[in-house]
Length: 357
Picture 1 (cartoon, rainbow, N blue to C red):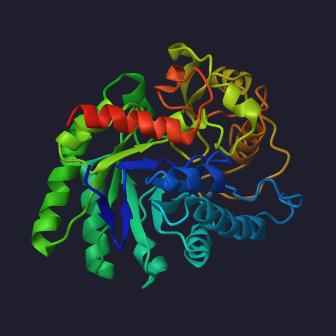
Picture 2: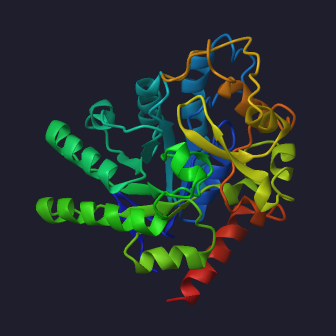
């Protein structure tokens, strides 16, 4: 197994742990993934939600805790792997989140839930790897062209996310409902074709990682054989002792059936995939949740018409509130049966991966 160089850092295993918010992937989970040689990723979606004054001082709390969680992850990692952050373009305070990650010493910034056209401008000359999450070759081309023309920079790597991922999805709801979307294999090939044109034109290397429905080492090997550098895996890391969410949150994923994983419309303006909690059942029936307080945290969200407050729903989930929580989940979430250690998962993935070499 060759190491993977991303800017001036190195991954010893071809695994990125996907960012999960609110409060699911923070410094503990990210640090232990990095310790095993992968990239651990901290979600910047309300990182400070556990602070006592969060609802009164959320922005300052979030910015402070982003830095604290990066420091925690780096300490756990002990110089191994990489520690990255995930920042949603849809966040109203996107710029500040990115700058806090740089100040905190993150090794990489991964950005999705929108097209991160201005990410290079915010990063400036900071020595940090930057990567967009894309769901089509078209998006990859637009980003590469824009970054190169406006900022003379190309992505240090790209994450290609397919329709089987958990959380927010970059596909129209109609396509997902009718199973008309491209497969991850098809999207990866489209993105790879785009990437190769930029690699050849500018004599650079842009590693591409696949995400969304990737669960085993055999899955990872299938895509590396196609030319991918590795995979981003998120949901599987929920069922670990090191995951930062509450024990009650993790337990909810252990007895899931495939039919318990459904699509919803998120206030971010995108479809999402989640467990069929009582909260989600209400959404699917068309009921509107009462919004009693609003942080105005998402650009696309209008609390006057929104069906629910995503901040409240995700923070309640992280605390283990099954009745009122939104539990995001990838399509393979039903495969988790017990709580294990991060090292166990990575060792199993790598054993399966290497058995195919």
